[in-house]
Image 1 (cartoon, rainbow, N blue to C red):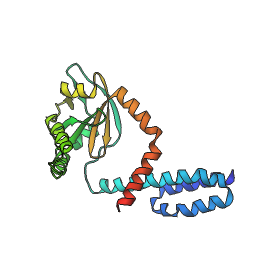
Image 2: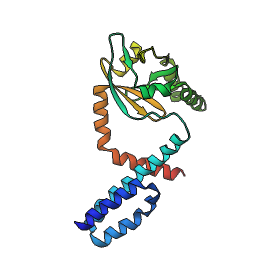
Image 3: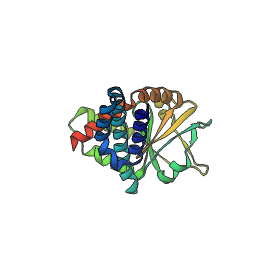
Image 4: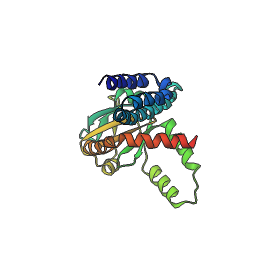
Length: 214
């Protein structure tokens, strides 16, 4: 048990000090020499921590560059006029006007004007001759609406957007780095439960793909 607790301390040390992540192989060797079961158990956790730290480092660079970043989740409710109060932290970065449109997995995407412009430029660079590209661009653009806040920090969600996302009353507003997503609360609960169960596997696949692309 002493070796196990020592291994846990090392794991936290790695997580708190990302610069030491490359040394995880040394830790693995240490554990293997003491207990094979502990080695197998900790190897998976250590690899997972490495993936998490890699993603944190990547997005920390984005944050330090001064780019807009939305994080966290908030629960709100629609009023009778279809309005929601956007979290104060999000309002600051959205600016005076912003774009709301169809998202994926039946949620809504909300972009600051600057990020929407970047997305538009990226989409324009895609091959026009492909049917899927044309369909995606048409849907994303045709369903987009330009929005602004009232004096109370509220924004109206158009009925066609509410219908698409299945939003009736309670919503969850989440930050996803460069954009905001608005979900029906029940739909989000189901999606979050499903993805949390495979979170480690998703992180590993992302890390491996990024490593292969380098």
